Length: 335
Image 1 (cartoon, helix red, strand yellow):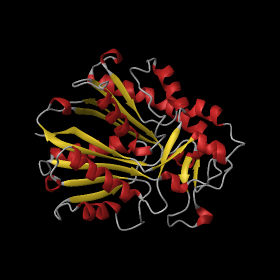
Image 2 (cartoon, one colour; image 1 turned 90 degrees about the horizontal axis):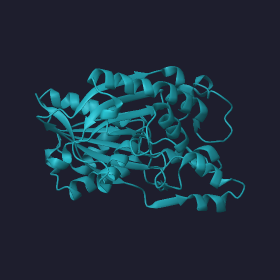
Image 3 (cartoon, helix red, strand yellow; image 1 turned 45 degrees about the vertical axis):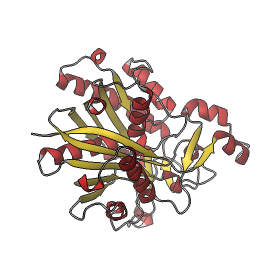
Image 4 (cartoon, helix red, strand yellow; image 1 turned 180 degrees about the horizontal axis):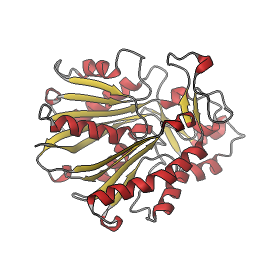
């Protein structure tokens, strides 16, 4: 049997950069130093008005093909994770397949998951490869959340950035991804929600959990999300370790969804690990939703902090509420 192996990753970020200094000049009443102390975010990339998730996805994939000399005709399946599709239909993955000139017998699907999406995508790719029908999967995460945010929304505009990551998942004889754990609690749907753009009548949509203070289409209840994360995620780590018969000390890194500094710092304290073991890298890109984990991995690979054959636990969590984790040993750098 063949297993999924995480290969090279390419990241594409929009050209426009919005710094905290830019926001401070535009919004002089905002206390940006205090906000940055909580979020850990200093700048974000913002998609242009005519730049959508498919555009970022195509650029990330083309960068992957170019930088790592990958033959696009070798791709058997395209998985595209996005919560900000170009259209309600057709499937954005179909648009990306055409623009990338992938084979017409390439599978292509969207899946609508946010912060847990990358790990879910790895599990889907692993399942496809285990069937023996697929050898190479192109997993793309691409988000343009900033299009949902009002310019006066202090809570969201200081956190979310746009971006895409393209990851090559290849068939391997060695099992490097294992112990997948998933979770869903739809009672938290009202803590991070965009109420417009679907087909439910506005009079019957799920209302935000608390009063919506700003005019953004996107609503987020930060405290509830933090409480959910800090209470649920340590248990997922314990489940993965228990199934793998490992101790936390035997894990080299915890690769977490990069939400905010406050949330991740509380998780660090709850789990009892250092920032070296659970890196936080938010300053330059902000919260890019489904792309945070691949962006984190690419940065750690480039810096040499994520070394070949290290054992890591990946964990995505948030909107839905949805979460997913797995055990991972990075074998790409030695292949």
